[in-house]
Length: 196
Image 1 (tube, rainbow, N blue to C red):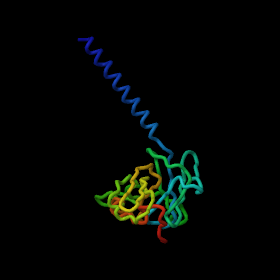
Image 2 (cartoon, helix red, strand yellow):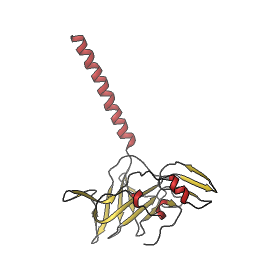
Image 3 (cartoon, rainbow, N blue to C red):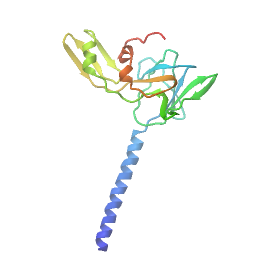
Image 4 (cartoon, one colour):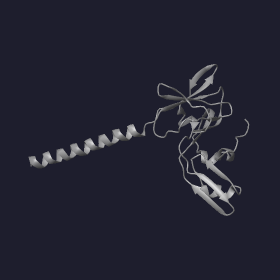
């Protein structure tokens, strides 16, 4: 009986140690540099960040944190490489001359509301988009998918994500999905975003 108990304990020890090691490696491997987003005073609307843009300035980095200074247009281009993984990001907006951190969630009555809406990856409907694109187009979607179209033939290739989109509200609002309301001119590059 003691032999079975010792054997069972050893199995538990090996399985437990393996799980802890796997989790530690996963956490370390999936970690990226944190980003601090600095928004103009009273800013609300779509923010689009295009990473790895040739000729654009790199992001400012201090103490392992990237600082993204969003212009009034809401569109920022940088030559810095896009990193995926988990991190502790923060969002700041100028309020009366001071940087105020915008909380991700605010309790309003029984609802959780937020200023920053949907930074997750959305699954775009590529078929519908291909049908709506003009002939001869060759462009990259915000999720990194490259689409080229010639007549009735379309080539759709998944790629690495280079663009980031999120919506900033003036006051905390209920959560929503960007693929339900993402403006057409923010769906496809290299279209220029409209003036604000």
